Amino acid sequence: MTVRDIPGDLYGRHRHDPGMRVIDTIATFRLRWSALVNRRDPRSRVADHRLPVVVTERRIEAHDQDVVSLRLESPEGRVLPRWRPGAHLDLELPSGRLRQYSLCGDPADARAYRIAVRRIPDGGGGSVEVHDELPVGSTLMVRGPRNAFPFVVPGHGSPAQRLHFVAGGIGITPILPMARLAHRLGVEWTMVYSGRSRATIPFLDELEAFGPHVTVRTDDEHGLPDAADLLPGVGPGTAIYACGPTPMTSAVVGAVRAMPQVELHYERFSPPPIVDGEPFEIELASTGEVLTVPADRTVLDTILTVRPDQPYSCRQGFCRTCVVRVRGGEPDHRESVLSETDHAAGDMLACVSRSRGERLVLDL
Image (cartoon, rainbow, N blue to C red; front, side, top):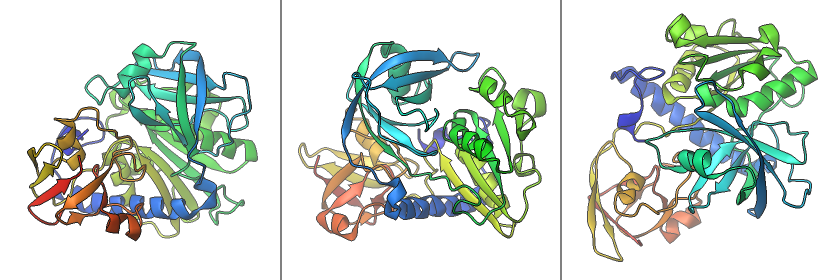
């Protein structure tokens, strides 16, 4: 997804708002800061091993059938590596694509992982492959679990007294295990879950078990929510965990700026808009091809037009899958996960970083 594909409102109607650019700049900085902190947090680390799993169950999780969940187990029935709410898996799909999906099952279930995937027909192909080419019995490799969105429970490491969750559509996947754990521990919590319609949002049956803790807002019934609708009753002593479209998370960030003593933790499921982008060129060293990177597109987007098999995953600058080596020019590094040694060696993340000059020469 590129910036031109990202809706200007919460769910699809495009409009330009200069104020949102400022808010998203702050949101992007906070996301990168969170990624850096979590990289240093032992709870978020895991050996970069590959683990075989088999699909043992498939379920349709939304009435429009655009969301499917998969239950993944060890082929030998072994116990799987432990995980905490907010964690994700890297899936190596049969095509060779590498994609990240949040774990949305129960961390106490040591025999299985659960992920949920929304079909995006005009996306990068990973979601369509999951929907159409991974029947029960399919085997694949996963990496992880990893956690770039760690959850800290009030009274168990967080100074907050209560929790408020905000989820938009498929953004419920990392939030659901957090809510389940908060409920199990008896922590005070609330949630606003939004989407276009009840037919499009997954796991409604599981959320109904939480009763009044969860408020479901759909565009067709209530109209597009604003920040006040997403954050009812939020005040000092609250920790917010949010996941959803960039406009939604940016609106939450903008509102929280005016709220003293409120924590904010969030994760996007789509790339952030490019802020203050300028066009430049990239040269592919192996062929001499010169490509123009437009102001509103990324190096990765441009590479994919001629190298569709170029690996990538998060598109947000924290998974390292799309790293490329720069042989000429000066990169404008817009991430916080590569070290100074990595930068000195010429490594750059193609999904977010840009150029400080007119051209970069890439070892591709």
